[in-house]
Amino acid sequence: MNRLPTKAARFRPPLQGNPRRTRQEHSQEIALDYVELIAELIAATGAARVTDLARRLGVTHVTVNRTIQRLQRGGLVNSRPYRSILLTEAGRKLSEESRRRHEIVVEVLKSLGVPDAVAHLDAEGMEHHVSRKTLAVFVKHLERRGLIALVAGHRLFGDNYVRPHGPKKFAY
Image 1 (cartoon, rainbow, N blue to C red):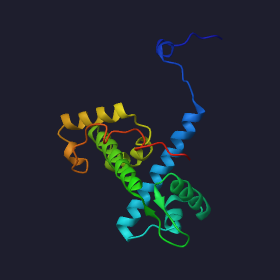
Image 2: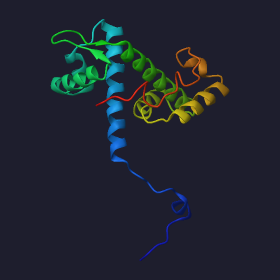
Image 3: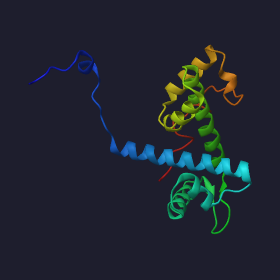
Image 4: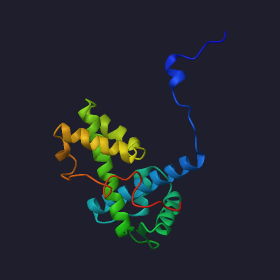
């Protein structure tokens, strides 16, 4: 039996997949996760090691080494065999931006009534895919509700903060 599409389906824009963009966004997401975790490990223990990253991410040390090499080519980390991994200035900035994006998304979800633990889990996936415009709207939403101070104590305006995937594209 042939059915006509629902009214909502008729007005929904068609999905236009762009495999290249999807791969690039996935690479960006991996880079953000790694620099954020490296910064977290350095802050907590004073060092970020391949074994620590592999254990925390649930991947092999080979995967971590390959990713670190890519991040090094992208100018985000410095690494030598059998030494700690260090963030470059660009890596530190990207890590801070990623953390702030995460905090904004968490606070928006919590402002909508999502429980704290769930908001943190959901934000982990969402933070990488929120556009600049959407993030700016999130910040305005938090400001209107008087919650902007909860986002790491930063006033978050302008292009210096609200970027979709960090300060530059990475060859990944």
